[in-house]
Length: 316
Image (cartoon, rainbow, N blue to C red; front, side, top):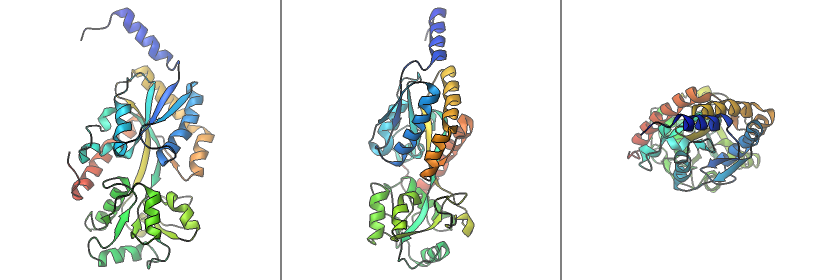
């Protein structure tokens, strides 16, 4: 490709330096009202302040997240289309769903994370996580059933990684696919499944109603919403799993735009009203920047790929 004339290069540089001069679109690959949408809209409120332009949040759903992530990856890399990337995009290649992966994006930073948990029906016979694990060991493979997301999704991987960490098969818990946490929790209450390995936050109302119990959280630290619930690590189980949300853009952002988005994104994330809204919903605010997030996403793809192969689900 021929080099741009000097005047064109200067104009492009000037446009990048002036960014943004008009509203920015933030693509959310999941439905309105869900966890990703909630995180994205809270963050967008802060980003509007630091960018000085409106942020239009657009939900592009379908294909278990593929449609929305593809819309971000394939957008013009001019800073006017950015997105809320979620943990699913590191699994698309392994599942054979898409060629989209960490290398498809300009990875800006984590925004937030929500830990997985071990939630059972209130009248289940296990008093704590140790009793649950003992029963899981004593039972036959597939006797315990879990749900919370589609097959191969984040909470399925949370369950698979936990059982592997216990020295059992990745598919020790037989997975029943669902359309999300709400229907899975209703199945749990109705004794249709044994365990919900999604976010304990989704179960909070049912916990308060005395219908389910959270035995453990898969985090490095206890959750503020459940201060008396131990982490798996507290119980000697070396497994952490968190569903995460990030700020991404199409690969190839001009450096002035990339650098400004990192700077202004960090400022937006640090705003008290942004962090307080997340914390109030027991969402963990996280901002680590491009280098750390890039390393994390690459490692997450490797870890997820291994679990998907153990589950017999890897195709790519």
